[in-house]
Picture 1: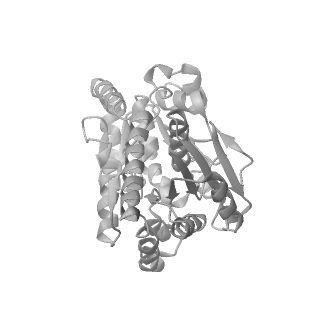
Picture 2 (picture 1 turned 45 degrees about the horizontal axis):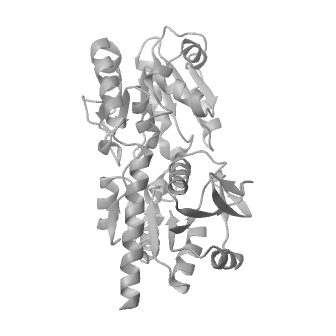
Picture 3 (picture 1 turned 90 degrees about the horizontal axis):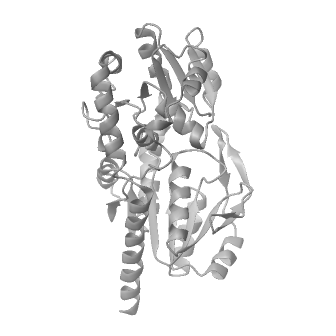
Length: 377
């Protein structure tokens, strides 16, 4: 098949959505499909065999790392040249609207996927009053698609409750070859803990932005004697967080990639994840693949991944002491921690990117075939 993938974010940006998309593109191309990625300009013209059509963009004021690309007529010429069998729009907001438009205008089957829980994000940027309006916009866009995919069962039900139709689950995926427990390293642990490798080491990996609620890790850090915290990633909330964590043993590491990132996960004692807005939480799955025990909020898509007391710990995000108690319990019981590590790795091994992409290809064929049948009729 020939798939035109419209996305509001792609390489060189680093986040969970881009991680999923780049693995998906790689496996689609590897399996014989052809992909055109339409995205904000990032300097790339090709990725793993896929063509990239980048449009000039400008930074979003509230989140400068996120670039906004405005649709233009040249997109139609690219589609006419590529001749897609199907259009897939990822988190349609601005550029994705062009994908919806051309799917309708050119009579091309349309799939949409939902990865970022934008209505919840509004509350963290002081725009909560717009939540109802945003749901109506999302419903209007997504209901143009023949199929809407979510990355967790919780999000499937959330979107259904807001009137979005034709929903299904796009299974989780993780690079189990990259993220492995044996990559634990004394050198990495020393780096993350800033020269205190014998102390309890907490880790956060992800966007450094308000909706991730990283501030909530501070009480955990302060409640555990000698504990250190490493924050891996970057984003618009970095300077505010530096002030918030001032006086604590917190290391703002910045971005890590590839084997360095895998080693950071494997070398830490606990992965602390306090976000309540996750549609999936890919970094949680990466931590589990690396054998890093997870302490995470029982919210959003996280319970689809973490089974409390079996492969990690879940806490009630409304309980001020829940995360502290769970982390203390994890660090206190060495035998239990090793069991959690083994079970976490076993869970992650079920969710390789190959299987997730094969499932997606099945959805693509189903939509394309049903559209062909309806057109013929």
